[in-house]
Structure formats: structure tokens, C-alpha cells
Amino acid sequence: MLQDRSHWRDAATCRREVFRWLARYNIRRRHSRCRNSTPAAYENNHTTATLPQAA
Image (tube, rainbow, N blue to C red; front, side, top):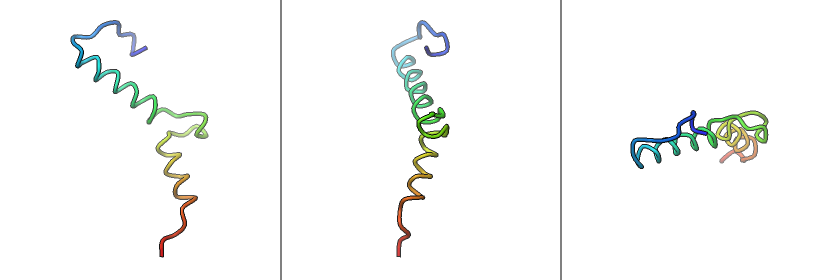
């Protein structure tokens, strides 16, 4: 799952690698649900398109 790693030096290294994988998978990876863009880019485009201009 995590680049074919089966064990880590210690618990802190394991947590860091899992967090890094989750961040990439959930934030930076392109999702088909977001029209094949990253969730951050999709949210920025959606927010810009739907928020009214401030006076």
C-alpha cells in the first residue's frame, strides 16, 4: 500500500509515512468525482464560481 513497505524503523516513522500517503491520496491526487482535478483545485474553482463579488 505505501510503496511496498512492510515495516518501518519506529512508530513515528510509520505515522509520518501514513500521513504523507493520506495527504497525497486525499488532497493532491486527481479524483474523477472532481472532474479529474485535485480536490483543492476543484474547491477553489467552485468557490470562485459561486461566491458573489464583495461590495
